[in-house]
Length: 578
Image 1 (tube, rainbow, N blue to C red):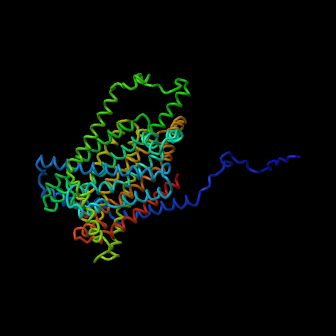
Image 2 (tube, rainbow, N blue to C red; image 1 turned 90 degrees about the vertical axis):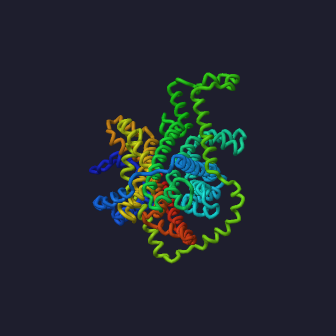
Image 3 (cartoon, rainbow, N blue to C red; image 1 turned 120 degrees about the vertical axis):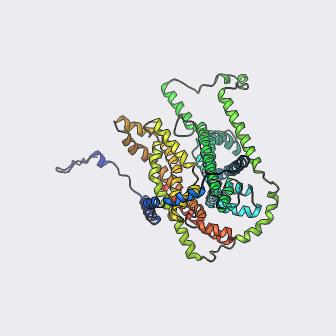
C-alpha cells in the first residue's frame, strides 16, 4: 500500500497557526441571546428618554426644596423611651421575619438544588415556589395579614418572611449546587442516611455562605420595612407615615434620619460578621476548595504529607478536653450573642401566639374579598399603561445604575483596586448608598421635582448602585487569578489585565446580577408608586385604602407575570453564556 503525499501548489499562500486553528461555532441560541440583550438595552434607552430626567430642571426647582425645608423647620424626634421602643420593635420584626424565611428556605433549597433534589418534579415545584414568593410584594402580603390579624407586628413578620423565602432559598440552592461532593458521597458509601448526608456532608460547607445570605437579606428587609408602615405594620415606618399624613414634616424627616442611621449601622455590623464568617484568606471557592488547594500545594512542595492536627488533638484523651483558645471563646460568645438577639427580637414583637389557631376561620372571608380580580373603574387600558410605566422606571433605573456600579464595584474589588485605601473608600461608599432606603429618597425627590416617574427612577437608580456595586465587587474578586497573573507576567498594565482577564471571566455573573437588579427594580418601582413615584403602585395604594381588593389581586397578577418573564430571561441568559 502506497501513501500519496500531496505537495502544496506553488503560489498557494501558507496558512498561519491562527488560521488553521479550529473556530468555535456560534450557536443560534447565543445569537438570539445577544440580540435579546441589545433589544433590552434599546428599550432601556427609550425608557430613560421617556422619564426625561433633566438636571437643569431639578436645579431650577430647588426653590421647592427650600420652601419645604423652611416649612419643616428643625427636625423633631419621639421621646427617647418611645423612640427606643420603636427601634427595638422594628428590628424585632425584621429579624424575626428574616429568620422565619431562613428556616423555611432550608427544605425549599434542598428540593430546588439539582444535586440533592429527589426528582425533577420536586425541583421544578421548589423553584416555582421560590419565584412566586419573590414576586409577591411584601406590602401586598402585609395588607392580607393585616386583615387576618389586625394591626401590629405579626403581619409585618409574616409579610417579610414569606417575601424573603424566594431570594434566600435561591441563594441557598445555588450554594448547595456548588459544594464539594466528596464528603457527601463518602457518607453515602458508608451507609449514612439522607439526613446524615445533609448535616455532615452539605451543611458544614454551605453554612458560612448561608449566614452571609441571611445577613444580607436582613439589611434589605430593614430598608423595606419602612413602606410596610403605610399599610398598618407597627414600628418606625408606621410612625413616619402618620407624621407625613398629618403634615408634621419635622417629625417625619426626623424618623427618616433615624431609619437611615439604623440602616447604615446594621449594614456595617452585617458586613463585619460576613467578613468574619467567610474570611479573606482566599477569594474563590468554598472552604473545602481552599483546603484542597492548600493540600495540593503542600504535596507539590513536599512540605507536608497530611494536614497537621492541633496540639490538643494528638490523642482521644486530650481531644475531649479541648482548650479554650481565643478563637473558640470568640465563636462560642458569638453564638450565644446571636441566640440572645433572636430571643430578644421575638420577645419585643409581643406576638399573640393564639392567633395562629384562630386566623384559619378568617381565610375564606378574606379570600372572597380578593377574588375575582378586576380593574374596577380604571379599566384594563389604564392599568396596563401604569404597568408599562413601572417597567419603564425599572429599565431606566437599571440603565442608570450600570455605569456607576461597574466603576465603584471594580474599585471595591481586592484584585482590581490600585490600593487598599481606594478599595476601602469604594466599599464605604457602597455601604453608605445601600443604607439609604429608596422610599425616603423618593419622598425627598418628590418634594423637589414633584410627583411622577423622574423621582422614582432617580431613587431606584441611586439605591441600586449600592446593591449592584457590591455584587460586581464580589464577582470580580472570585475570578480565577491564573489568567490575571499570566497577563501581568507578559508586562500587561493593570487596565489591560482588567479588560483582558478579569471582566471576561466575570461576564456571566455580571449579566446575572444585571437581571437580578432589574427584577428587584420592577418590584421596588411598584412600591415607590405608593408614595407618588409613578407607575402602578399609585393604583395599588388607592385600591388597598378603598378596600378594593379585587383590583389589588389584578395588579399583583400583572406584577407576577412581569417578574416571571424577567426570571425566565435571566435563567436563559445564564445558561447560554455559561
